[in-house]
Image (cartoon, rainbow, N blue to C red):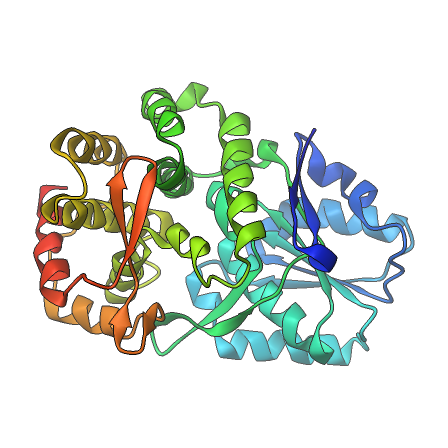
Length: 358
């Protein structure tokens, strides 16, 4: 078992990485917690498998469990779905002693965390991520959110979980597309923070059947825990985690959340961001070609048409704008980043041309 600490003073919590952690979840419930109700939020497909197992284990220990199954897909991060969860919790007599368990990928974690942050001004919640992307990224750091008017995460909060419980064995049932989505975020960590790790990943992805997921998950969690511990509210350092996300989010909004996965969009966004870094002279030819080569090893979706005008529209509404300027993450080398407000819309527009090479 690996225990990684997110050090946030009174909000400090642990990330537990352990094969079989789902089945020993009760061991990780804080001993002092005596919740009136446990609200288990998951997707339909997960609830029928892992959700039932977890629910039975909890009920056998005497907990009252309210299970809420959401439709699969990013469209569940919706204000109407949020309202339906709140209504069911009220109908079930949940109170401030209740706690939420988010069993699923980034969508389940994001909406569950937002419910936890807002129900009765805040209740405890646990993250049990089931996708590779959620294990290495979205379940850690307390970012919660809903999409609104085809804009990513414009409603949300930063609200830390009580713990993150990661069971890598759950990856065995994931479709390949979900694995590829998570690999995009793994590449991101190496690109922004650890060149040696990026080099390892470049070799690992050549043989996905033998990819050392446990090692990769632990490394990504360590990096993110270190960053979040230093900058919980994204006032500085934490912004580096947005590498590839500005253009990635715009691609998601343009193509529709049902047509491209988050990690796939981030991978394409990283290619564009690396191109801008290269064009501005921050990234040399060898490093630029190396990261593009790594990303190109992933079987990413082919973009038949790119409506640059619409993509730019979504970028203009990106929440990383401050005082009319966009905070854009560029590479100054592999493992080193620069937060720039000197990336023009024309720079971004030109970078989209690299997607034609995908």
